[in-house]
Length: 315
Ligand SMILES: Cc1cc2nc3c(=O)[nH]c(=O)nc-3n(C[C@H](O)[C@H](O)[C@H](O)COP(=O)(O)OP(=O)(O)OC[C@H]3O[C@@H](n4cnc5c(N)ncnc54)[C@H](O)[C@@H]3O)c2cc1C
Image (tube, rainbow, N blue to C red; front, side, top):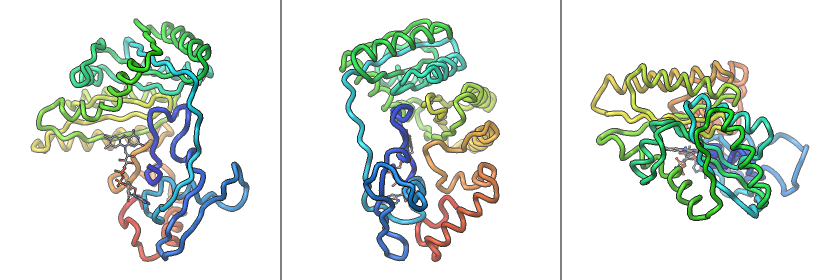
């Protein structure tokens, strides 16, 4: 997780791995052991090597120890589901809630296709409409107030129903279904391989990007449910591809390219959490420009002159 700069459903409130790793011990390619920071809560000393290593995808050294930030377990939690007439309205409700300062702990978008897939796999009974899954953390009165305020915003964006619960078993069931989505997608189209891609854009451009992605999926004749960490502006399209259909593979590849280009054009990034790996290397220059990528290459060469750490990845 540290190496890919991972994040998850609670990132909107608690941050990504980049925000939660305080310090690392790293074995460098020359065999030396490097410690990136002390335990002080803040520092203005030297370069920030912690954040350089987090997300480096193992290209600069081997992480052997991590010091993590801890967060208190909230006194109360409540979960909610909320349906919308379109993904556009669902995104705009989430954005408005965040911009109005509601400290949402999780807000996950499912498009109507993903709702259908999850209903089938997780034995849910949700209406096949775009949905937001939400969670609020705080005191007993705090979570009630957050849920009420969110409900008012959702109504403004045409939400037909807002149901919330504090019962732990209902919350668990809901989030289990969210975390089982990959398995739900895997079992939906017999014989298909699931290829997941992700992008991230400024949250003010999210509705536009998700809408464009949906239109592209339809135009290309692909089957690809969309799930979004909408509070972060990050979403995944999971393409169910028949690997014996060369034309479908070509259309899936073209879609992944177009989605990354679109995200960059909207001042976003070609990957919010999956990393560059080998497949998205050619987006680094369009995303950062030659100067920044040149600095990345220089850093890689100075850490690893013999190119022994994950050669061929990222840079
Ligand atoms: C269906 C699906 C859903 C996903 N959902 C999410 C999501 O919600 N959020 C998210 O953030 N990501 C998501 N991902 C991507 C995810 O971040 C990566 O797949 C995951 O972090 C890889 O973990 P792993 O343990 O399999 O690592 P590996 O694939 O083994 O390693 C990941 C990278 O870290 C490097 N590495 C491993 N160990 C070390 C070490 N000790 N020191 C330095 N480098 C090391 C590896 O060389 C590799 O480059 C998803 C991926 C899939 C396929």
